Amino acid sequence: MEYMKAFEFYADTDPKALEVFLQIHRERSGGEKFADVFEMGEMIRQLTEANIRREHPEATDREVFLRAAARRLDSETMRKVYGWPEDTAQ
Image 1: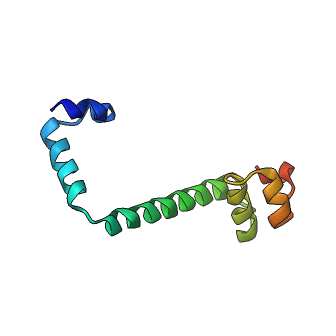
Image 2: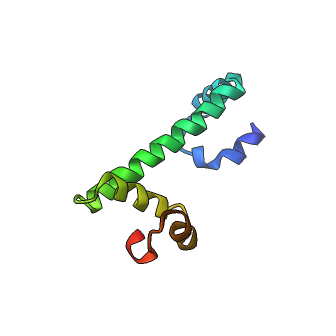
């Protein structure tokens, strides 16, 4: 399985198990794979917000939203779109 070298990040996975995983992935529709992208994005958003709530337990829902947005957007965009100064964004 020469192509397996491309999957070095699976080095600790049994080659047979990896082949099963890849076959299942190949059989999934484009729509299913696309839905996974949205699910992962939602999971990342939830984890980001949970981390912000842990770091800033007094933060309102709006502040949590803004702090999360500030982790994805540059300071100029944050000021233009949300009127939120950079020094409080992080």
